[in-house]
Amino acid sequence: MDAIALLKQDHERVKSLLEELATSTTRAVKKRRELLQKIHVNLKAHTTIEEEIFYPAFKAAGKKDEATMYFEALEEHRAAEDLVLPDLMDTDPATEQFSGRAKVLKELIEHHIEEEDGEMFKEAKKLLDKPRLAELGARMEARKKDILGELTTAA
Figure 1: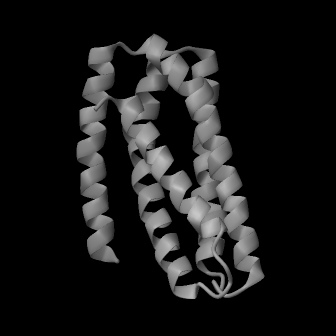
Figure 2: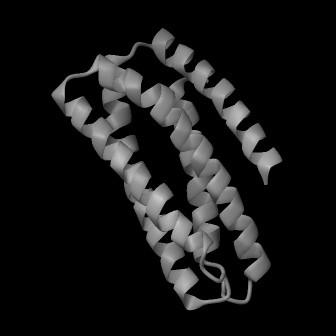
């Protein structure tokens, strides 16, 4: 699978999990905890392969505009993973505060996905040829498998 197809597949999975979380009720405490754990694991794996493999290749192949997209994407990852997600994970799932934070995380991630799908991936297809995207995809799949294995055994 090429790099962009892999990342788009991840985007759909995370969007689906976030939608399920956002539509859950304060009574669905167990379900919310399980969904949050799945979101955490999937986001960590996804952002790691982007930051370690895809983004550097994209930035290296591009110029100033691509560098700007690269740094903006890193900041969006930081906002979601280092600020909003930890707060959400520390919030009681039986509260409306949890619902609000889940909605903010969902909106943040969806905005990030729209920018990647709408801008970054289109540029990447111009800058990186099919063999390069396939090679990146293979590396990303292998790395993702390792990360998921580490996170699953750690949980």
